[in-house]
Image (cartoon, rainbow, N blue to C red; front, side, top):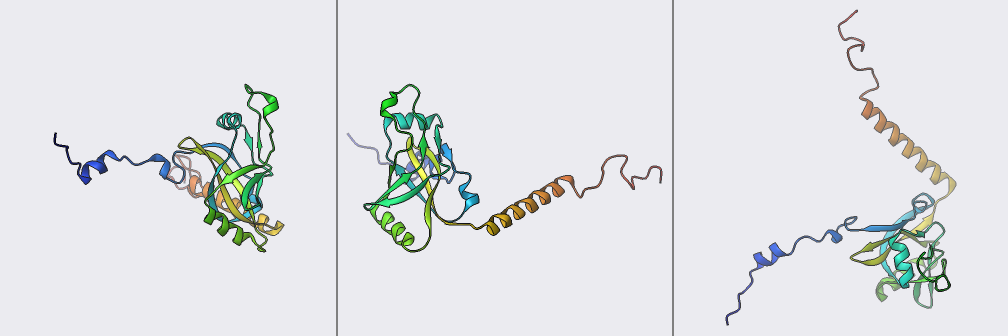
Length: 189
């Protein structure tokens, strides 16, 4: 029996682009930390797996998590997510479920060492931005962040308001009235 050789072109045709490879494509978000972008100046982002129990995964799939006061910290050379609340799965046994336990984050050893060296004496912290599912696995998007002062927050609010006003002005088309009763339309002048 002769085996048919596969050409490179055939392999490329079969290998459809994976929707999970994009930045936002293929993600099903379980929780987002919207306050993190307001409270902190985000510098560098990381992705880590998260060690969960079965009932926690089921609860996350139903979007039962909160990251408002969560952060990540090193303990014994490992990175842990602290303060993330995952609500108990309603069909599970309640005695097996802890809502605010520390959960181990799964990263490569060299990534952990690089992150730990950046944190040492720098005044930065690691903040979770979101928990999402990619290819069936729960992932956490982390960011290396420094705190914002009150002045920085006010400047962000001011910039956002200016952008919103510019968008409104562009949408209105210059702010004048349009239509048949607009000035200079040729009627009644």
